[in-house]
Image (cartoon, rainbow, N blue to C red; front, side, top):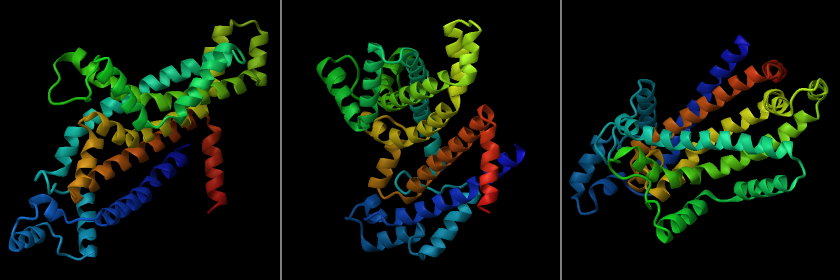
Length: 323
């Protein structure tokens, strides 16, 4: 188990190196001049050249790349051209808002998805099962941006119940925060909720047909205890995998959701940074999202290993077989 943890942890570093390199290259491929985006095209050529020199943009790509790597190793994400502030400080201000949105959505989706999935599995082939399974299929197929726009149209424009924007400036009290959080949270919850329902249902049905669960049922255990304590435990490994994938995917989904609702998080910030050709801010934001993505996958594997110890042994054997 210790070898698996060490090996899995060491795999994080080459992944991050590839992400850093690709981010640097792709950022330089964004069309447009960052100096023009920052000062406008009315500035004199001399001033623009001076700013370009101060930003290090006159250096070769290789020199810029080495300098970027050196700064990243030292924990320095650079300075935003557009905001003229350290990138780390700007990201630190936005991360809490993104975490609030993504974690709230995922917690609701996980609890709700597992509860509905277990319910449908225990009532297989019933009318309730057919309805909830159909709804989960529709939920998985819905595009996030379409869901967000429809929610705004219905609950903000037509009914006037909730604000059209996620959060702007200071929010007065918990009730007001929940009103602003409601629509972006629902938007980001629907797709993972539907995924959890489908995976939980199929996994629980498979567990209910296993020899061990049939033996436990033969002892006369109450159906509720059998279902929630024993069957769900056996059905957990695939559910844990999907939770990890959805948590990682929630960060990318937040980019769209935050922009639809003007939610002041990482997603809105990276969209603005791309529009402003703010290289340092783009690179820093992508790096933070990539680190979160890699760490979530690592954490998922470790939890998966705890609920299914055979996974670590199989992974180690596969690694040895492939050198």
